[in-house]
Length: 549
Image (cartoon, rainbow, N blue to C red; front, side, top):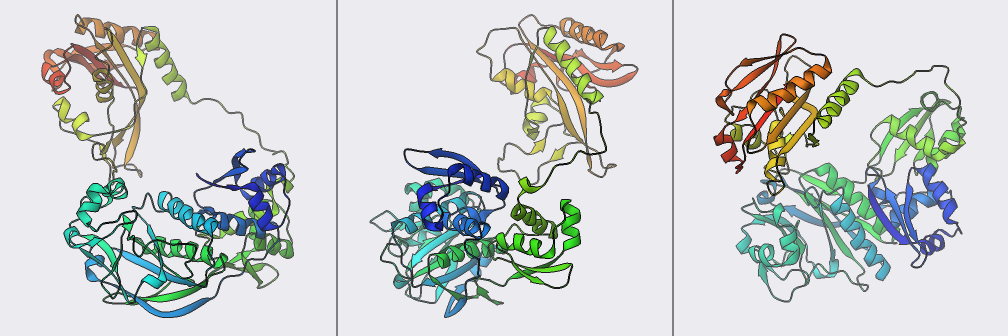
């Protein structure tokens, strides 16, 4: 969840209603939000905003929604005018799959609060919806310092030269990434790129280098600024449209007039922002059926209008709803029904007892897992709770085995994590290597699920309950580790048999297959010096791993 903050008295003043904190908390609960904290000394109110409601990430957006919810002000879409200007998207930018959406806003009357609001909503959208600028990067510029047409393109970083925001001297793209604080912070976004993106105007003046930083000359908005140019860049055009619609709605609420531009690609032209209104038809019968209440058509429409929908009655059962351009969370008819409930207020629903009763109980697998854990702890082992994700190197290369039946990760943010773990011993070895400075013997275990490939299932994978244990000590032996395994199987009421078998990660002749109730379910042995060396571990280690599924 994201958190927005503002002065409580400012909210009451701007909506023209004297709310108590308790009343606001009650309203927010019905609306689906909650107060994070309130500081009486500073009057600072913090509210948690759920991930899907990115239109509420600004004070302006929150105020707009609250005014509509309290029926203080009816939402009306802003009108869009044509600026007759254009932004050219060069092929050098589209070769990297990049797009842009832009807008112009005129007749603004900015003050320090509004400028602070612009900065805050930029950062919150960057952090959440924009995934730290990876998906969406936003730029705001004084219009009077720009000459159209603007070009969005890419070039080698040494050819990009301008004075970045907060600096006094010209820097190249390389210099900014290497030496500028903002460039260093977001350098990971361009580290694999041969060319960097930038905007320039018709006078060859560089406006910004998205997603990194704006120009000091053209990217600083002041209280005296009356007209601004807005842009957002990224590779997902839908996200860019949504972001621009949220931004333009905020500036329209500031009192500005929003103007469109033509975005000219080499093979097409689009108009930005795209403020075409989506419409959806919902059934009153479906609303009442899904919510379990009995609303009239008039009541359903009233509740939807509280949530900023524009409604038209099509019949005694059907309502056509027009969705505000900033309501990116409305994807399905059920989302509209959900907002009917928010408008109605969940506390207004009278709870009833169900005629159907079920007695819950723990799964047998859970009880069995707890029995294993309790037994291992009783024998002096320490439980660890490893992460499910791993790497090919940790799971296979370090144990001299070829990986089989594992699930690879398609897109991993961390290159050292690239598979879903299919056995536990590698995780125990990580714990051992991180605790070599502690006293010995060290007896560790984990009883958890691993994920194996299974192409016969519709999920193409299956979960298996594994138990793995290791002992690190100068005098540890196969005999000692097998005695612990024998004790465990006796407690569990299972018959244990060990059959000599060699494994690439155990010392030859010092390992065995684990057979329980005539099924081969695991392995046990003394780890080879080669495996210990790959883990930079000097103490002898014995261990076992069993599939208890």
